[in-house]
Length: 319
Image 1 (cartoon, rainbow, N blue to C red):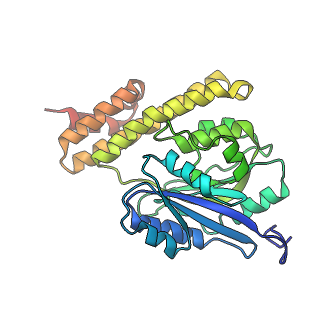
Image 2 (spheres, rainbow, N blue to C red; image 1 turned 90 degrees about the horizontal axis):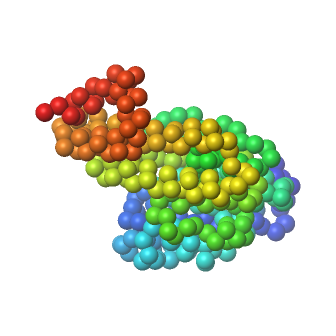
Image 3 (cartoon, rainbow, N blue to C red; image 1 turned 180 degrees about the horizontal axis):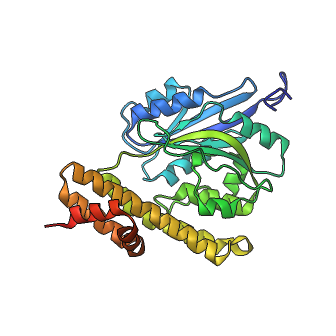
């Protein structure tokens, strides 16, 4: 093996398929594909599969510019798009990247080296770097650690990972049946949880994917936040039910579930504040009402202990 842990020159190459679903975002797609092509090693054959879930305008030409395979499907949703990519990809390993995210420099190689050395593991994950839309980090890369045993279900149930940090044996993902097409969001977290229940997953303690958050203060972002709160609650509860003996203690589950609700409530309060700055009082009131609907408990707690939340509530609800 060479210093990266991959096969020595002259040995068989490792093949990886990278599935990239996209919908009507060619500029972001170009950045995503560029970040994939910037990663690699002489012994790694990278096949990019672009699955277009939107209009045809220039996406096929853009995919071919980066040497990618291209297919288009009419069934809406990222689950169907990723499954279409899984059906045609040829790599021994498979990875994923959303069209609005980026792979970090150095991603992929250490994952493949780990899986080459550990036949009993079906996948490896790296760290996620969450940024604002301009690419400024919002927090330290996470997770900081994961169990060396490869049994990581409880940890990623408590704090979701991003699918772009995963490299897996293609056979393991196909064995799961791919992504759940009944889920129109949260399907990536669901797949990671199902994989963690059935397989050992290694951890690479270095940044793998740059996960770009959306700009707060739009009606679309409010709707997405409200929608994801409902869908991810379903994903959480479905996988708690599946977990059996791997299910965390009830108090830990309760804390985790409340933590997720709190994330969505805090996001909507931040959106409320942004609407107010823009003079959009109707949007501010709606976002605040949706936050109450997601978790009255969090909103009451925030009103009591957070002066900023009290100020936002008074400003949004005053006549």
